[in-house]
Amino acid sequence: MKLFPAVLAFSGLFSSCVSVEKYNEKRARPISVKKLQKDIDFVQKNLYTRHPDYDYYTPKSVLDARFDSLRKAINRPMNANEFFMHISPVIASVHQGHMATLPAPLKVSRERKKYLKTMGASPLQQFDYQWEAGRLYITKNKSADSTIRKGWELLAINELKVQDIYTKYARTFSSDGYNQTALPGFFARRIPTFYNEELGPLDSMSYTFKTDKGDMIVKEIRRAEKNPAAKSAASDAVKHEIVKSDAAQPDTAALAQKEQEKLKEQKAKEEENNKALYGYDKAKKEYIRSLKFYGKDSTLAYLKIGQFGEGRYKKAYAKLFDSIKNAGSEALVLDLRDNPGGRAMEITELYKYFADSTFKIYAPSKVSSKASLLNAGFYSRMPKAIWPFFSIYYPFYAVHRFVNTKKHADGNFYYAGMSGNKWKAPHENAFKGKVYLLVNGGSFSAACIMASRLAVLPNVTIIGEETGGDFNGTVAGIMPILHLPHSNIIWRIGLMHVRPVNRTDVKGRGIFPDQAFSQSVQDIVDGKDPALDWILGQEKL
Image (cartoon, rainbow, N blue to C red; front, side, top):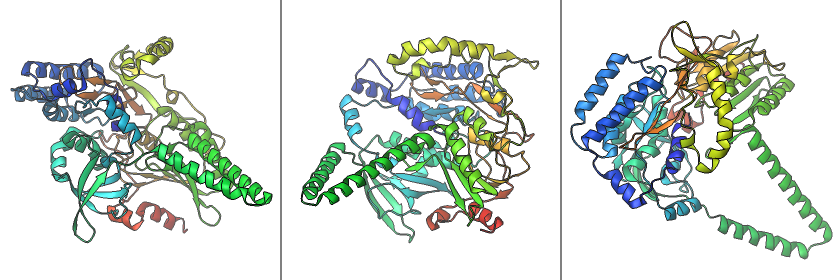
């Protein structure tokens, strides 16, 4: 799930006719009770009229009571983010993981924006975190300080304790339904958001760690440097030295140097092509879709998919499964752990390589009305310069959505215009051998729907943890981003209850594994993967 980076990027585009200073001053100013009550009305009205299944997990009577209690609690003026702490738990109690709130965004000056463009990641973005047994640990260090180790516990940032952050913000978000496996990952990934709200966008922060030996260490983490001009100058200097050196060498040496440079250029071009094809995660410095083999004869293929987005997925899967076929692999591991989802149409394409007969991925998606998908807030999410071009496309979009939305016998409206709503045939290179599906609490949204569809195949064994998403689907698809009128709190709401064809009677829970494994912080430190190790043991590799 790429929820908060996408919303934060949108927040950066937020504009106002007032100056930065006046806007931020207004942001901190108390808002009248009357205006805050209007924001509550705005949320309740939009939730009840636009969300197709707001009462799917929490009955309407319970939600009504929570909104009434919220109105009573808002009995004095408060600033936007104080109000955020009151209203976000009510929204989270709907238990729809895609529906999320963010505090009203800070605005930055043009000078600050220019500065940030020349700099690298903020201190908060230089680590990967894992929340385990009520504590936050470092699982990856991307900072310039190489002495900070995986497995160290993060206690505080600028003396603001992690435990206090958890206590304050844990009720502001939820997973789909009642499962708990997604929540630790949600909290860990939102650490930068929460600390940024408390401390502001600082260039230097003081981190307090507890080492693996139990020592307390304080480290200053600075914003990463990114200076293309300096790098370019250094590169030019190196090239200059090469030219000087080559001038003194025989022609054969000069030719060899040119050949080397040509090979480097070809390799760099190939890498760029692969990044475009398979997708590339710059933060993790790894391909989004990657394949490797285990065993002397490539007996076991291991395909990891980090998300269903970016890259040319149709061509990528064709090449990947060609490789699996050519290798003659007898078993395949599909790793969807920590895959937050993405494009719905992509999993339809991927499932072709596992299907044993003609199939559909999706049942029709429940929506709130015949025209509910037409007002999706597209214009508010794109620069004004693009509006004229989108206006040409929009009528075709609107007709397609309207024609494919129909009222069913149960009195509800359903949209059936996705490619996965139609019958598809298996791919000619569909894998027929044994399949091991790896999932965990980070397997969410489209990844969870893919897992629920694979779960019914006889050759699939599910390994890991209960998925973070609901077996029976999720409310997502089209998700407009709204701003509460007076507090300016950001609220994302889903408009489509996207459901897999096959469903379970167990409500509000994910896909359960056939063999349960989790990867602890200590496993990460030790380089162990219990779930994959079990598979390798089963295959005797």
